[in-house]
Image (cartoon, rainbow, N blue to C red; front, side, top):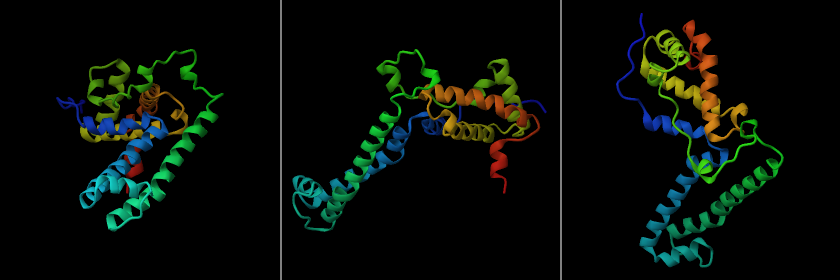
Length: 213
């Protein structure tokens, strides 16, 4: 059985982008996963509460200046009293603790390098689309032949999904946690190509084995 041609268009662009967030630092991941939904929930509460009372009243209740007068304002008051200080205090404590611990700690991948603000703010690229390996380097072609043709019986969709899961979880391990976001993704993919090829040659995929009932 020959290796089937990959789909004409890359699959799951948004899914690959979402899973690539694991290359980011822990705090940045937390903001994306929990901070933004938390802020969106507070914004929705503020809008609905402002329709029942004035925006200034909601603000004064939220900041505990005035006592609440109805259910939505009570909820805003509780969030302003408990949730917001806890979240902000936890984030501030994490940032300070991380900075203290990293004063004399540096990843070997960043030795002697100068990082500008562009490098610091630039998000990581997406996890590679396996179809691009079809005409890639010899090592990429050999890997995709084993991983797609042998381990997944030419099922490009399943192979792509499992490849992304492997890279996502690899980037979350201790070995890669200290790396720069771009280096983290690059090294995770390079290491996975090396370590996933031998089992793929005998028809095994780590994700398939782990999810086997």
